[in-house]
Length: 448
Image 1 (cartoon, rainbow, N blue to C red):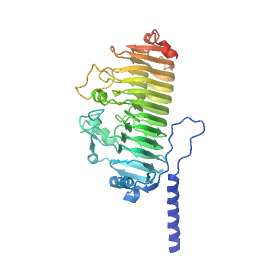
Image 2: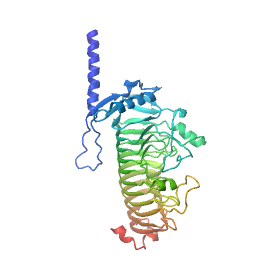
Image 3: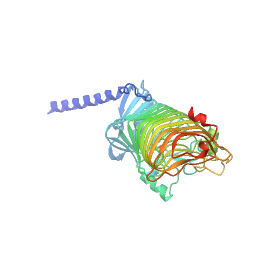
Image 4: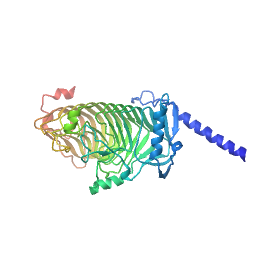
């Protein structure tokens, strides 16, 4: 019996070692010829499990302290090449915790990091300087479930394990208007660089799901983001005042915009002055009651140089939505969206200058946004109720708006385009485009 027990323990140790070695190896390269963003998770110099720090994955024990101890060990150890924090199969109930630099958070198959619904245990943090206050309410805001600030070389990946925000308690507080502060995100990284998020399911966030803000060199690939369509403000992925961001090969179905690019709110975003730029989005599938792809409406730091392609949306409120408002300031320029398929939407496209509220009475309504150089091409839609609208601001006309090969069809008929305070061009558009886009000198921008 003793010999048998020793053999069993040896086999278990060997299996654990094999898993650890496999996790430290880099992933296989993408298929030859496939255009993808670089997302190679590096070999780490050390491997630890949250279970080794008192964690219990039974869905009942609270593991906040275990995650904190594990991350602190990674930070103190400073292993060459960083360290991997392994989350085994099981349900790991936890409150919010911080990540550190040079680490990989790895969720094994069957692993669930589940947020506690005890809202009193969530710490408050300062508002973002580009927002000036919590996005929903004045004052601070609740810390995200998984959080990082000023980090470098951080990866969140695995075998399609789940990060579950258990957001229903927060949604109920929002509906009952009993929220004391702005709800937490599921994942927020602030002022961080060299970030990869891949092969993880994000589920039922209290507020926005994935929020990289003031970040650079971010890749988000092969993720699934889920929330009920009636869950309030559960945006999928919101890059915010961030640069060199790639989002690709993901499925998103939530209660708000699937992807929305932001850059600060009114006078606070203008003063902070950090744009979102150099953003690539491709091969996204999803559904939701608001926009599939959006810019704004918080764009006061500016949004520029955005390339979006190969979107497949169904059951949407709006297929593509570019939104801003008087008082925002900033700019939206050099945006290209192409190869889009829509199956069911209230609006195929909206580009509007009257969307979104203001943080306080100190905003300056004379700070008008500049919207220039937005190209929407190769769009095909069916079961569309209203083609869309392109509605600029009287004292800040939206310029060089190009619609090319945009075909939107409905049951009996599709509501016509509505336009004002806009110039640009429209080529091969169905239903027939508004006159503002067919009789201007900017048609050459569209043909080029």
